[in-house]
Image (cartoon, rainbow, N blue to C red; front, side, top):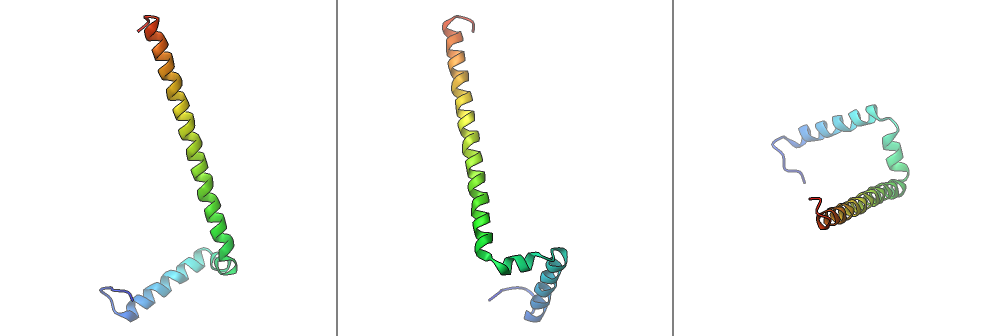
Length: 82
């Protein structure tokens, strides 16, 4: 059940119009969704996992760079360069 400031007929018409807009702007999309939702879910999960992997790699690289810089600054401090 939807709670809206519009009548049921107005909401149904608006939803139908929006769906028709999507169908006309992406003709193959509704068919692709209807054909294999499992494949779409798997692709979405794969994409998310890839993004997580890239983020973890970036964090690891940033951590390594920070450790290297700390070590460099520590060595410079010991040598009296700072």
